[in-house]
Image (cartoon, rainbow, N blue to C red; front, side, top):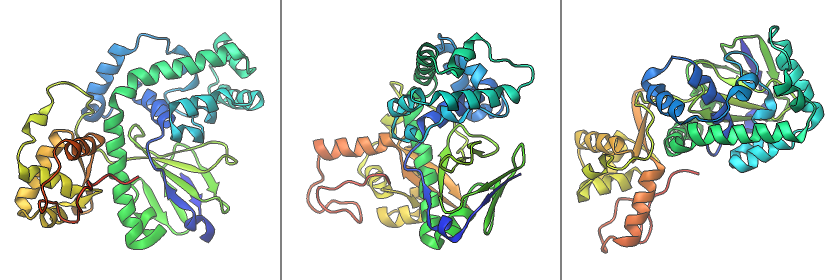
Length: 347
């Protein structure tokens, strides 16, 4: 059981991550690559990623076992800013911390030893660290980079749901809205966990980080002195991961009404709100949203009895391009828009 203890100050400092964390997604995807669960969502991704992996992954496998602890230095806070920033932070990890975390990894795997592959890394030598950074970059290029727009869209949809909860009921409602494996029993957030952990925030607040590749249980850093972050599984729509291919179903996206529907989705709305904004029936709004979702322009996430639609980066880019090439004539605007503006996703 995991128990995260909040004070009043911690509740005031709960915040949502602004975007996916590139190294959390990279490391957690390595778990998904080696298991067989979640075939509907991850099956095609596994097949495609394995076909692209032509580099060394044994070093990554030594650092990231299929179950249990992996070193905290692999997921530095700087990775929220991008891959280069995250890898530079990994490279800058002090030798003392490297040694301590790798010793802990070895202690939790009785049959594993700090072989030559990890021994130099534990000593902070430049060569092994350069090799690790290269392996992480190469693996990310194969497993994460082609699917990044899909990952971004899924995280953005989750952020829209949490944002609505925060606006409706504050931090209490936000914490209560988290996926079912997390239970808010003020002032403690509980979750099923492989081991017993007590995390006391003590006024530092908590960063909530939705993750595409987190599955089943949330993840927290092992070192309680590091900035507190809760990585939790987002709710998948059930559709498989996709990556940019020619000939996707964008050809179905035709007509003024559907274009207006896409504009009306803006930074997120339910089907009922979409129908009102676009001036169409509820059934028509649902049908248009379905086509837009199949085209990769919209992602839909269920929130209780309602569904929430948000635009993907591809949908936003399409609208921005259309606004630049073919601006709407005066008087033909989606509800809530002013001339020269287009909706953009939450940031």
